[in-house]
Image (cartoon, rainbow, N blue to C red; front, side, top):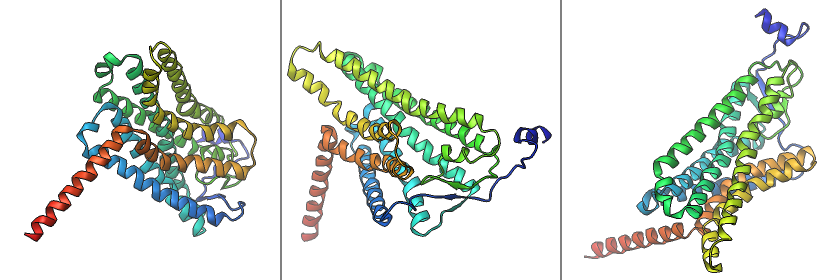
Length: 325
């Protein structure tokens, strides 16, 4: 105990607050309209991702390694939206911005795990496209459902372990200056900056975690498409190149939607309010747009939806005929 107190400093008493206050969007003008927008985005996200998961589950033709990753992405988007948006609306619509200490750490854990998994899941999809285009004859051997499931499982463990480390390090901090978190949720970076004892380990993790779950995945994805582009230059005809590249358009759209807002936010100086709005949009828009992109740009999904609708229509017609008889 003496060693712990000395780490805090001779004149500092360890303080674990009863709650934190999330500042949120209080300085944003006409913010009530933004809350309506968030509710609409959440509704579409739940409906879209649940639909994609149902289509993949019901159509056995989609039980392939690629759609294992697509199913997981839809699951992550559904869980991530459900972990973030209802809590945010509850806090700010009903002015319940005081969140208990343990609840705040739990909120942080789930939000960070799901946000991390969105980026890591894009890595799994890029690996699938890399093998499919560069080694098409070996695709069935190199990319299996078991391998894809193991890869995604390892990503879940990695995201959970990294986030748990960040949360664990927050518990050693003393918050004797302020309990106001300048963000729209329990943000790790904003929280450790409130500490009045040594937060060096938190700063290190605060730099390593984004590197591991954002910038390294983005680098891998970009390198993947450099290799794909180089391979496509060797393809004989323009039509074959276009056909091969078309299989990547849905994934590229997901990558752009997820990473571009983050790059814009961190590569330019913006006001605190603009930062909060930008980051919140980065958290809620990809889960809404991902299922729309896959339904519109992926031929297999469109065919499956059409097939399932036809089957349902036929079953309804059959039931009506039976009832008439």
